[in-house]
Amino acid sequence: GENVEQHPSTLSVQEGDSAVIKCTYSDSASNYFPWYKQELGKRPQLIIDIRSNVGEKKDQRIAVTLNKTAKHFSLHITETQPEDSAVYFCAAGTSGTYKYIFGTGTRLKVLA
Amino acid sequence: EAQVTQNPRYLITVTGKKLTVTCSQNMNHEYMSWYRQDPGLGLRQIYYSMNVEVTDKGDVPEGYKVSRKEKRNFPLILESPSPNQTSLYFCASSLAGALNNEQFFGPGTRLTVL
Image (tube, rainbow over all chains, first blue to last red; front, side):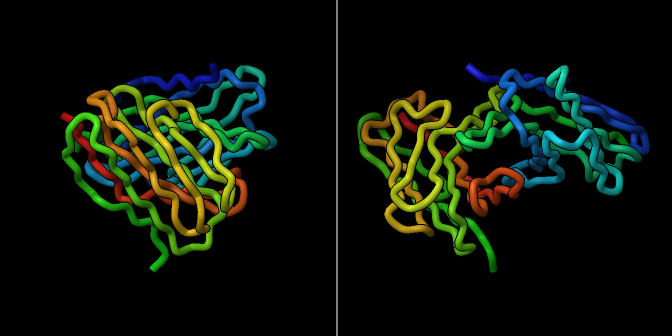
């Protein structure tokens, strides 16, 4: 079946450095790619998303890139801060079915 | 306040005892969905609903039932819970068909089946 692979599973960076999380999806019909941040004990919250007709999207320190040909999309966080520490999930959604497939998550630790 | 609520937040039960986890949203969202979250497996979609009386299976529907009789409510029913259904459950909702629209998650329900 369809799946989304997410790497790495854990990531530690020094405060101020950049962090990159990568996802690969299998369903070529996927056309919507959101990223969620989940702080410890909290619910997931959307931080950025991208549609298949766009290659890149930025929102302040966060950016997402999409390579449809390779079926890859990535989350980039620049100038990381301790409050960026959380678990990040990528997901792939498909119009017509409205099913979501999530990646297995990346635990990001920003070291002060 | 716009929100998704779930009840109960915590539940410990025994194998075979039917239970229902309620989910309600006050944002007039058409789309609602249930997920389970397990360590190392991320979020997996159980069932989703495009609108009243319309439901579809997600990736892991076995052992679960849902209903959508009203727009605001989307209960998750475990007719005969088993220990492998011990998990953290999230309900979510969004506008229209969910694509290009933010899913708002409930606070989660931690279920333990003994």
